[in-house]
Image 1: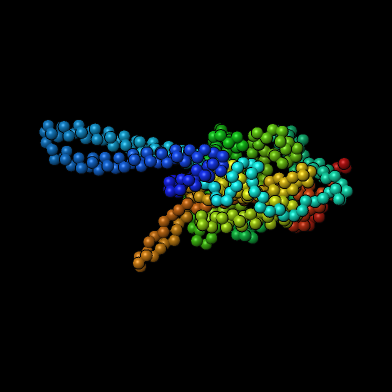
Image 2: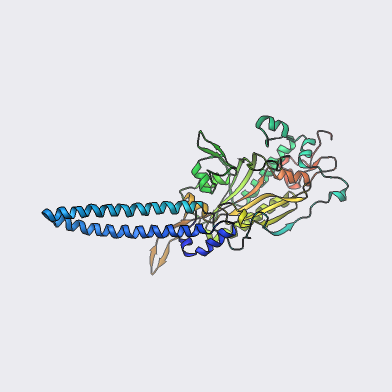
Length: 435
């Protein structure tokens, strides 16, 4: 949720942010108009209340017909007080609705535009040249079928389209990947969590998702619960309505969960294999920190994601996502896109977002500020909204890039060295079904 004080002081920044996202800047003016109406109604209410108190003393001292006349005026004044209070409350509700609908203020430097207007920050690694090695690479599903590790047919039989079974060594490879990410997180002071995959609507909305109109979200109407598309949602709600102590540094969590997305609007896109599926596993980093530390923490999250990609031996690039392609809560987002050999292009495997104080304001998550001493007197520290950030360390989709990048001519797959300790030092996934 937007800080109304910041918007009031710097409206042009918010107008520019809306424009960069491809949205109308008029919403900023609507907030300012509603805020002006609210403050005007509050001022009128306070003046009338003061008048009402003074008038009440006059009435108390009056006698006879004079008192009866004054009582009629009291009734009229009370009606005016009530009207001013009603208008102030209505204006506040209007402001809240407008602010909840407004996406986060982007950070300076975020590219303007839509999905294709990102800025490439760097390339790491060189895509493997299969032509030089003398064979045509298979896609991940063909490899998965050869090693008997991916079964889409039975997945569709059980759950419908875009569901699947992972089997044998590919199922183990997925777990190995998540465990390696979990170890990296623990080594960097993250607290491991296994999170709920069903959340209440106020938690989903508090994280920045539009529970009424987001076509990606699965809803269990009978229970009024929502299936999460990322454990970010559950971890964001973990400290809702709490005051945190961040004096010892950022509070970091790594949440492991299954995730669910309807993939609405993706008909005909990536229907082959496990790139766009309805259910997958993910290890998500989530951080609470003071807002002044958020950008530095964002850089750390990106660094940890890159360590995972490099450990998996993947060629990738990092992009600064354009404003129009940011989620509602993100002020900036970096995507890491790995090279997919059979597609001849980079595809997103992971992303990290700085949500500044947007989610914390919606979920009422604050930090206690330190006491200060002025002229020998101790002033108790107040509270303020924290910053929240998220980033993915591993997810099922990574298998696509790992299988295709490390495949061999016979269909087997060399397991990245960093993952082998999590697979009993196994070096290769062997072919089970002959081509």
